[in-house]
Figure 1 (tube, rainbow over the protein chains, first blue to last red):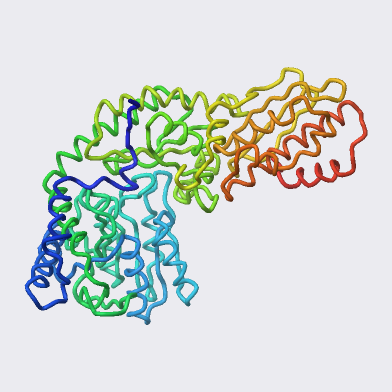
Figure 2 (tube, rainbow over the protein chains, first blue to last red; figure 1 turned 120 degrees about the vertical axis):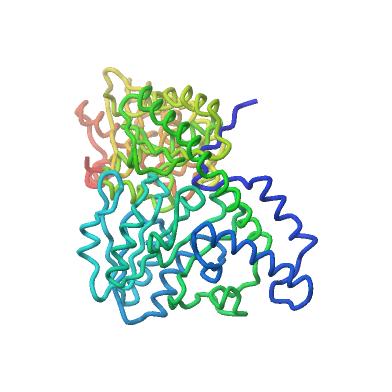
Length: 385
Length: 147
């Protein structure tokens, strides 16, 4: 049988069996609506509150600061649009130019409604220009939103530094921590974070649930109106099994975080070093030091990413690319372009993201297959060395 | 991204084992279209004997659809006369691949452009008359895919 190597954990992760086990009773045994006043309703509500406590503790937040939503995309939409709606006095929003589409497009949406959107640039490793950020913050600035661990190139931003700057200037600070929550150290108090997005399905929890942390005292309006669930911020029947799952996934992640991160980092570096050594004309995108433990992003000169991806897929290896050809917009990765790569350099990028069950054997397999794949695609290309 | 683009089996077959891959040492005509910034470049080489395309090869930088359309167009024109080859449309390319995802239709147009350019180059080099349609097409391609 062909070997299957899943190296797309940054896209989504399988649900941990322990998480699934924790969720199962909430599909059959405990099926109450958290708003119901009877026993089943109370049991459901209690389960949700237990999950809320786990997530709050992980972030060093209070339980009433945790809002469960349906996705990280929804959390980011709620953070930007909800904050803007509730605080119409200030009209400037600062983001980075390497945000995930859901932050970028929410900001653009606000831009069409009278907000001035400023995008801070990054250096060639993907670290935001702190000086530029400092300069851009003014009296009219409502919010700074910067992604914590970048989903494409893995660069980690210094949240504490940004948080302190925002706090000093009376500006709200939101971070999209979808890729880093459960993996990197996050303390909303120490880092002076006002709003934070965390995801479940990136840490071996189910899809369809995420969190927005909203610091106490911050005014924010809902984008979904209805029965007033989640403190009025997210009306919708509460997705109890998914929330229970996110709670369990968070609990496990925080227990194993340090050891797992160490182990994954070893494999990540083995993969990076191995590729750079065996494949000519390729380079690592992003920072070597300030990098998510599970992210590998490499550009291969003179080849296009989608074709490499499909060829690797045929050999059982699953990864992603920043090539235009694989995107629905036919535009290359805006993150790689922001870091100064040319369009062809972005087209030739592959992202491998490792996870809880990545093995040394799998990394060896990738290292044995990848050089041949790149060689084959380069043979088809009219661009020779 | 098969899930997203849903390539046909035939596209994947041509992509994995492209036909007529490579270059021709002394070609009678070469057509190169596309540019690296957009992510697709196709280079088509033809050898012509007595008005017939007797050999054709390609080199392509691009996605699976770009490689598959290049491969299939070489199959389609091999053995055809210049006139027959000029009648080739992107529809025959798409049909021969059992369809292309809508977002990849441009790859089929690119492959036909590469063929037209190779024939244009051959006609110029062999000092033959250029059909008006082909001259107009060449002009359009030149402005479209400037390198």
